[in-house]
Image (tube, rainbow, N blue to C red; front, side, top):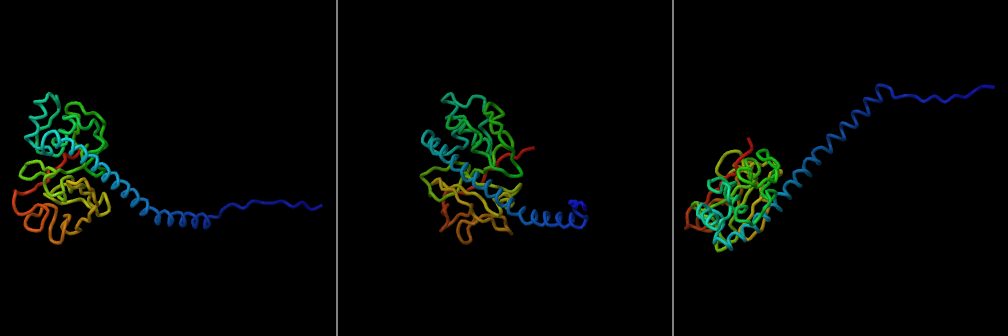
Amino acid sequence: MKMNQNHRRGFTLVELLVVIVIIASLAGLTAPMVIRQRKKADQTEAVNNSRQVGLAMFEFETEYGRFPDSTTVSQITDAGLGTGLTMTGTDANAYFRQLIGAGFTQSETMFYVKTPQTSKPDGNINGAAALAAGEVGFGYILRNNVGLSTAGNPARPYVVTPLAASGTDTFNPDPFDGKAVVLRIDNSATSLQINPTSRQVTLSPGNTLLSTGVNTVWGDTGGTPAISRPIPRS
C-alpha cells in the first residue's frame, strides 16, 4: 500500500522578503497618520489645560483686581499666602506660580503643554519645585508689564503656546502640526495657523497677536503687549 504523506512547505527567502516589504510599506503608510493623531491629542490637551488656567485667572482677578503681575505678589504675601514660593520675576512660571500661591489651584498639570522645551510636571508645588523649569508650556501676555483683566477687549489673547525657542512672538509649528493654541480673555481657546515663514500667528488680516493700533484687539492706546516666556527644561 502506498502511503500519502503531507509535507508542510516553509517560506522561501523570496516569500519572506515579499512579506517584509509589505509590512514595511504598511508601516510607512500608517506612521504619518499615527503621528498626526498624537499631535492632535497633544493639541487638545493644550486647549483644555489653557481653559483651566483661564478659570483660575478669573478667580484670581476677582480677588486681586487683575491677572497676575509684579504688583499682585505683595497682595498675596500680605494675606499670608504663597510662603516659600518664588512669585517674583518676568518669566511665565513666576506669574503662573501666583495662582498656586493664592490658592486657586494645587496642580501643576494645567500649566503643562507637550513641546520640545517641556517635561511632565512632578506634582510638587512646594518651594522652588513648584512650576520648575520645563513644567510650564504656556507663554503669558501682559501689557506694559501690567496684568490684563476682563474689563478689556474679551478677544485679547493672553495665554499662548507653543512658543519658539527664541523670538518675541514666534511659535514652533512642529508640536501641533502648524497650529498654535491661543486663550483669550473671554476664556475661549482656539487653534490658529502659524505662518510658516514668519512663524507668527495672525488674529486678523495684517495683524499678529501683539499688533496694536486701530482695528486691532489692543487698540491704539494703552501701551505695548509682550509675551512672558516659560522657562525651558535644562
